[in-house]
Amino acid sequence: MRHFLNIADWSAPEMEALLKQAVYLKLEWQNGGNRPVLSGKLLAMIFQKPSLRTRVSFQVAMKHLGGDAIYLSSDEIGLGKRESIPDVARVLSGYVQGIVARVFSHDHLTQLAAAASVPIINGLSDSSHPCQAFADMLTLYEHFGTLRGLTIAYVGDSNNVVFSLGEAAARYGVALRVASPRGYQLSEAAIAHLRGMGLALSLTDDPRAAVEGVDCIYTDTWTSMGQEAEAEVRRRVFPPYQVNADLVRLAAKHVVVMHCLPAHRGEEITDEVADGAHSLIFQQAANRLHAQKAILARLLGS
Image (cartoon, rainbow, N blue to C red; front, side, top):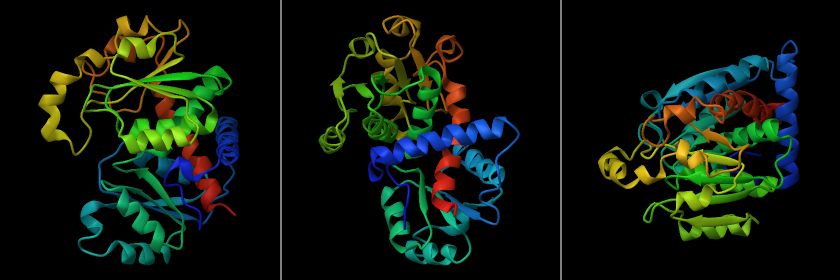
């Protein structure tokens, strides 16, 4: 059984094929609609965390491909509380052809995958966000016409998003610079993992040095879901890492700016940049739909 839990689980040729599939499915949709390759297929969507892009993009993707999706909130299932995770996986496997789960703990995903007889897709966990990173690569590919040789500077908290961004960059030949304050940097294990995948990774606590000459500046919120108690401390630590016009000017003239959203405007990114000429933020969000179509077609299709 094949799952989509982390990009590292998929080889570079597989990720290249998936990218081509996403490009094809987006073009097909733009030229009159997708063929119903998932007709009769159902996707269960388990969400412990609220979502706009992940929930809507997966549900719409299934509709565009001829299938359907069922939303299951945390209160409805009580994953691991009301019912054991393996039991949930086994029950849902009898009803649906795939499961996407957006969870606090990545361990919940691995338990689902171990017990399920249908594919499990990581809609976000505390350690990774592979669907987001894959959509990011689709967006950069559309804009530049290639991925190999590009350099991304990620500025901000070294969280699950930058981890998956690093895995995706490694698979597509993209270099990654990460600028995070001390105490908010990638773990030694994460660094070793990403470099072990062949990623050209550089680390700094200086955002200005990180963005010099890069093709893309990427950021995320300073405080993620589950970190609300740290919000005030983080607001004092992260202002030097704001993506604003002064920072963008240090990058290449053709630089693009990305953000996985939701954005806390005025904190990690300014309105001027988010809505400016360099921004790919909303193209990036829209591409979640088409990137996930490729994943769904690959895992659930015949």
